[in-house]
Picture 1: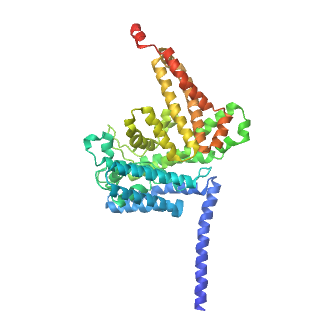
Picture 2: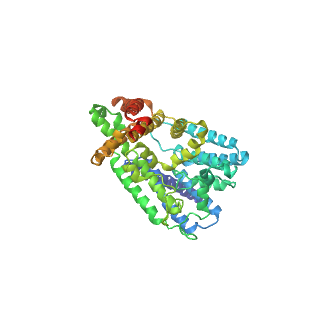
Picture 3: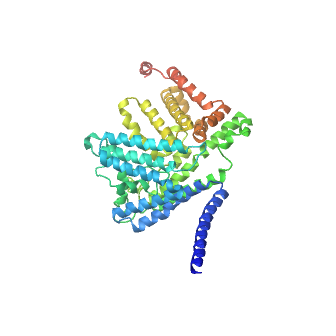
Length: 487
């Protein structure tokens, strides 16, 4: 009787466990469905917001504690977030972190270590893209792994720079060069830091170690006075989150592929692409603003003081929201969007190609790297190819207006400034949407269908300007000899 009762009790406990697990899954599924999102997207959002209680615990109980406790805390919380989102697939990040540590220890501060790191980490990421890719945007382990890949490559480069003569390094390289030898626990804490593990931002090992050592505070000896700045970024992130949640069912990239879209007039197709192109970026804006708030709350966002003595909290800023919303130029969007990733590419890739002696070639290779880093879909290549083309043409146009007396005088007319701004913004966001179409639709059959429906407007417009503007420049910009005579 006793064994029978024990068996029944064990069965009940097992059944209760299964039902509880199933209920949790059902609850998340149901909640995600009611919000019009996938369960994975909901898990991502929950994980990002979990950074705030993690940061509060760190501020109040660990800020000036022993370094190993802080590294353990960051590693444990980061691994928990990874498990909550991706289950056992967290082994991908663990494997790459451990192997990266071994590369640094076994190969030392050598160019071989840097090249091995770059090849291995990028190959692992691209293999992950290859084996997990679908025709849709899926949240899977490769999403945080692309963030981790940049972190570990940057770590190897900074470690290599740390072995060089300081006088041979630029001031920027001196700032990031790692003089000590990182332990496995330090590398793990740096990699799994909960405020940046899933979606960034990027930061250096030296900056992370300053956080661990209690240096990133505006009040020496006390926890940082960063609650208000953190809440401001959180509030702004919530504003974008609410807006995106309410409007996302009505403004989708899927509509670009429908017959209804094709049947509308050409002007409507362009205007929808313009509005969608701006709106689709808001999901990234939301994530980066919320995670920036977490980084500020911990102190990682501390960036010294302004001239007037006011603390700056923008060290982990991935967005300049006002510039993003108001600047009418493509270069303005690049400067205000995904700032830390762009800074990483400039620091560890673009500037390291200086030996090529060609700025445009270095820029083109940097954008190619960015495209591959995002994934193997053809849409990424098309998007960054368009960015390269647009930036070149925009610089040509700006130089033409600046150097042509007629155009510069025309551009200076105050009464026409609102009209110029409206035209610039229309062109800016129309062709930003054009570029993002390939980025978000991924595969050639999808983005090609949409581009056909608007007659490859972006390519025609900017390729035409690329060849026409040099002749316009010759015609409208007086030669130096003529300018001297005029003077």
